[in-house]
Image (cartoon, rainbow, N blue to C red; front, top):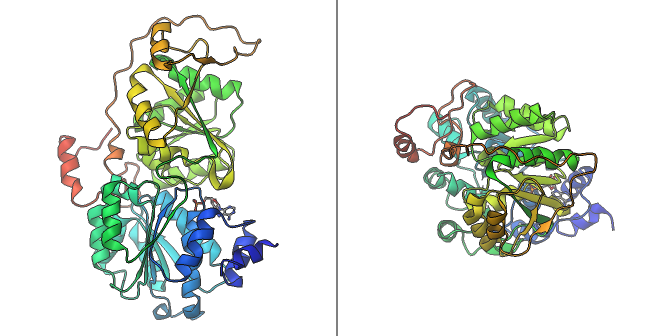
Length: 467
Ligand code: AMP
């Protein structure tokens, strides 16, 4: 059966089935199989699906189809009112979702655009004035446009909350509620989330009308296509172990997670000193720098992209084979999100975590969430002391084969003072788009969910720029 007909069997019209065939999609993914007919039928939807499952097409294709009867080749903005609003937590995800809509709509006269903070508003205003059917937005910037009266919601008939759990984590709920209150009450609501903490369930109950529920991975479980491994390591040897793994395994495209922006910068710098092509992506970089870092990584120019959680959110890197947790995430849900970058769309992936003795509690929380014990593999010469290792492994460690014969066994390193524990990256508590629209600047002023702004600043001891 041709691709065309497999997608057409879900009820998709030829211009859309053709667009996915053009993109090389061979068959619908499970979330697409389940969601597309439901969304076409006008149902509200609560979908448990993480990024990488093909969830964007699962909502974008049927949304476009629902608007196809009103599609117009007219240049009049009045013929292109905003009909669908898609809210996402980060700019990167917003851009990716927008690009998907644009690609899927290529055979239909339906327009989409994206608005996010951190860049000048004028270009976005011009796009909005031309008229767009699909508006993808991060919440803070969207509210700026509302305030500016540069966007109208009176024709919105579909609302999508994408990565709702992340929007919750990032403190966007008050902004989202403000936006929802501005929408026409008669509309279809689609909520996508990787995890379903109680607050998301409550939001779903308030928002969705008689929703269809679909669950792609088991609840809170990580994608099955990903193998997980933990390497116990002395904290001060983490960086060396990382370089060692990248070099001995010849890793060509690996996303490395760091808990802090400073840590990410420093790690990328140290890797470069080890002659590994590495770059960092985090909230202190401008949008242009982040896009360039991502393009180099996707294009194979850099082998290692060191990222903080928020900066990596929603990154879609086709066929990414490995993610490495250099720092264990602060919350176990972040582990699920991190490894969601690999093993996507049916490909296999590997999630490697470097675990120092002080990370054990975090690992236990992750194992509880994903409901599986993660295999621990000791890499000779990098582990903590034998006693600590015994405590960490719980059971007999599987030892990795020794390094290649060409490599001299390492001498025990003189013990260095452990680094001071860093403050957690404010980016975790502080989404990163400005609420107003400054010109693109080097120093990032994260978008603040309006109500949280003062609290976070107070916690940080004022409004100083985080380091
Ligand atoms: P998403 O979960 O929406 O971020 O999608 C992850 C990746 O899978 C994106 O690169 C999509 O282009 C790709 N994708 C989505 N649907 C399919 C499909 N049916 N076949 C192959 N790739 C797909």
